[in-house]
Image 1 (cartoon, one colour):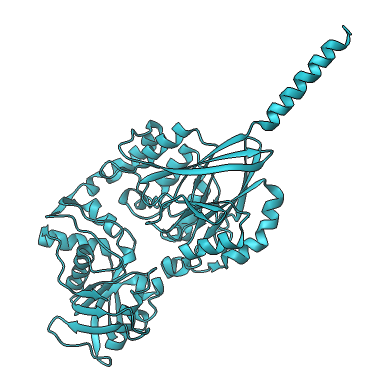
Image 2 (cartoon, rainbow, N blue to C red; image 1 turned 135 degrees about the horizontal axis):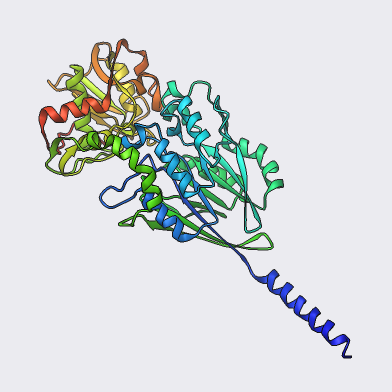
Length: 477
C-alpha cells in the first residue's frame, strides 16, 4: 500500500488539475475603434489618439481592432495623407483594420503606401482593387484561440468615395462574398469576427445570413453606438472621431463561446499616452501655425443637419455662391464633417468643416435637372443638400420625381424646367459622388481647382463675424 499511495495521490492531483484546467474559462478582451477620421488630438476635452492609447493599454486587451475610416477629417492627419494616424496605430499595437470608404480619399498610391507602413493588416473581402496590400482576412491567435478576422466594406463605396479615386475598384455583394470565404476561414479559426464598414441594412443582411458570426465590429454610421444585438450577433460600434473606445469581454470553454458582453468607454479628459504624443509632435509642429490662425468669430454654435435646413450648411452654400458668382449653390451635406463652435474661428476649424480635397465647380443646369438633383438629397443615406439662392419645399409623401413641390429663386421666380441656371457646386458630386448623376450632365462645366475649405476661409475672413440663422430656404414635409 505504501508503494501505491504516492501514485494514487499523483493521479488524483493530476485529475484535479485536468478538471480545473478544463473548467476554467479562457477570458479574452477585445478593444476597438471606428471612424477616427484623423481626429488625432482632443477637441473640447474629447477624443485624441494618445488618449485612446491610454484607455486601450489600461485594458490590457488581447486584440485591438478598427472598423475603418481612419482617414480624412483634420489638417493634422490629411496634410500628411494619414501617415501620423498609421504611426500612432502602430505604436498602440492594432491587430487589424478595415477598409472604409474614406480610405481612398488620399488616392490609391497614398493608400498603398500607408498600408505598407502599417504593422497590421487592413482588410476588405468584398473589394477587388489595384491596391494588392488590402487583404481579405487574417488569422490572429490569442490565449490559444484562433480568431478569423474578415473585413467587409459597404457596397456603396464607389459613390461614397470620390469616383476618380476608386478607378479600377470592383465591389462584390457582402453576403455572397462571405458564402464563398467562410469555409476557408472557418477551417483555420475557432471564432470568426466580421470587421465591417457597412450601412445599417447591410449589417442586418450579414447577421441574418450568418448567425454563426457571433461578433461584428462595425463602423460607418456615425450616429450608431454599440452594443446592439442583431438576433444572435453582437454588433459593436463606437460612434465617430474617437469619442469612445469599445470593449468586448468574451469567455471560452474548450474554444467554444460561453459568454460575451460589450460596453463603451468615453474618451473624455483622459491623460495622453506619452509614447504616442512623441510620434505626433513632429507633425503637430509642422502644421500648428496654420491650424491656429484666427480667421473670424462665430456669435454662437453653427451646426449642420442631414435632414433639415441648418445654419452651417446655409453658410457653406452661401460662401460657394458668393465665390462662384452664380444664381444657385449646392453642396452635398456629407461633405460637411464638423460644426463651428461659438468664439474665435481658426483656420483648422474651417478645415475640419470641409476636410476633403474637393474643388469648386461652376456649371449650368436646367430647372428639371436641378429638381432631380434636389430630390436626390431626400435619400436618407445621402442627406439634404446645402443650398443657396433657392427656397425649396419638399413633400416626402409624394411619388418619386414629384417631391420638389416648390422651388423659387430669391426674387420669387419659380424654376422653369427648360431654362438654364448658373450653379456653383463641387467636383465630387459633378463626378457622380453620392449618386448625384444628374449634375454631371450639365453644360459649361468649369473646375477652377480651388479647394472648398479655402472658399469657406475666404468667406469667413471677408465677413469676419458669422451668426447662425435660418431663413426657411428648405422646408421638408
